[in-house]
Image (cartoon, rainbow, N blue to C red; front, side, top):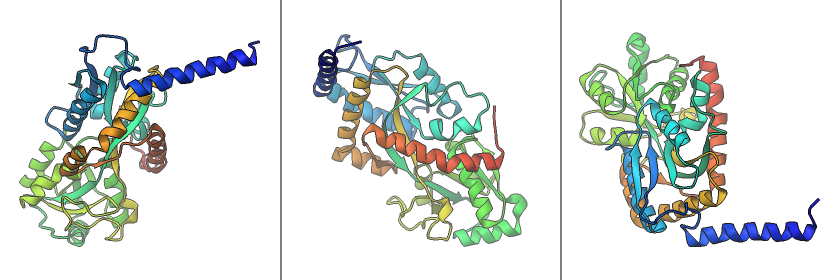
Length: 330
């Protein structure tokens, strides 16, 4: 049995070590050369919004950590391939992943054969940003308002469908909730990402789309498609003329998606704290806020517990919806 005084000194030594890591900024990083890059894995292709955010973070973290930070794209399967890469990465604080909320709060209930356990294999670090989803129409039907679309859908239920970037993601289930709310079940049409959805909308191959608002705003502004409503509780600054679903009488179709930094299982707590401290600082920078706002994202950057709480709330929201839908995928 250890002596109480010895245990007290041990706890003090541990606390001082963690504090030292936080103060130094790089102290919790692995003991390697300062020119050895740290890495942010992102599960989406170069040129997309998640990739752009990862590269913005890498640029800022380079200064905070006084070492290079690179971005590695491991694309496919809605971010799940990136999780596999994170699991295989060293758990020494040198590798992080920027991933969507679906990885922890939706995929565990939608996929029969998930290659990871979100409670064991990925460690929350901090929420980066949140974003709204939007409902848009293209050339057919010619709906100028949500009420126009509902009237059309009720008259043409066999044509009421919605394009989504992937099955099992929030876009998919927002469509189910919407269909139930307006009394017209809509058929989802999955695509490989957002770009082909926009083309299908403009070409009249699908009647509508549910996607991240930032992926639809540019074509909306150009008059090529029309966003009819957004899921945020307030109107978005990129398209302030577009109402929220809550305004239209659909409070259940309200919510925000988010992305966050995650570490491999086994990463030291001091390293998690170091990355989170840097994230909170970076998300508070005026130029970062401006760039993210232009992209349609709202910076968050709070302590790790906020991400844990946010994930739990997301699970409470989506688990019953997914189970009630009966949807599963391999």
